[in-house]
Length: 347
Image (cartoon, rainbow, N blue to C red; front, side):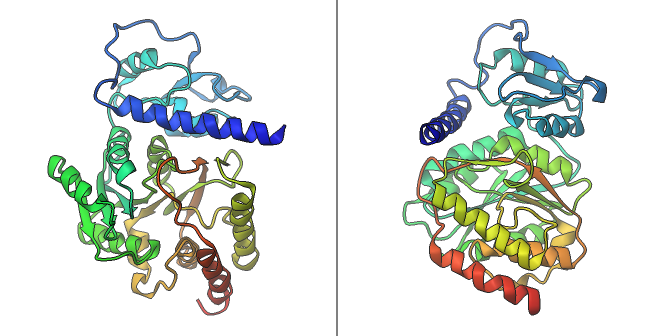
């Protein structure tokens, strides 16, 4: 029974991601239907007194005036993909977008969310040709930001596609690296370019839709009061979808192992969905970062804490990649096993 439920959840998650791809295609973008009254399940929440005690998954579409109320709804069980946050008086446009929404669709904002900072989203890629075009389009739909594709010499032509996308859209930049050198080195290269070009908020995210693009604005909003915002699978409300039991056990075990050595103040040390302040990155000795695989996230978190960074974790739903192959393997896990004690005593 449990196995069937898990399989069903994975299928639903994959359908949601596929549906987002459809919505972002030129033929179906903001379907050209006549305006209609908002759906019956549409609700506005204008202040704390209107917050429900709990929300069943998929129960409602919500329109709220700010991200604080959006986070309160997420904490009560609401799906972040079904919450519209009004910005710059765009409530009417949002209502029309809500009216066009179909059950289960992730909401697409009438315009990208804007924040008072220069924002760069770093996309490290290796053989991500199947995902890159739709991912860049999704990011720019949800967030007023620039994108830096850091490609490690992908043999499938990802780098060539990135160049084509950059030629069509000035908001997309490309950093070519000659060979696959690891996730950590790719992000460090991206951080250095971001700081040189004066960006104030720098995001890490995957290129495979495992990290939902509609959660980017949530992390950006939370960065107003935190130096590092982590999209966390392991705080209340966070989850993973589509992982096998061994993969989930490996991830949870790695995080418990890390917390046991380095402290329980952070729940998801290995998370790869993040928003950094430029001021925090400038404090860190980026040239001294030793880790390169997924343990890179552990070391960056540890060094951020050592600098007194304010860290906030927001719950996210991590969905296993739907195209391409995962880069996670046992070698990467063993790197973390060796790194954590070293950080505790020497790092």
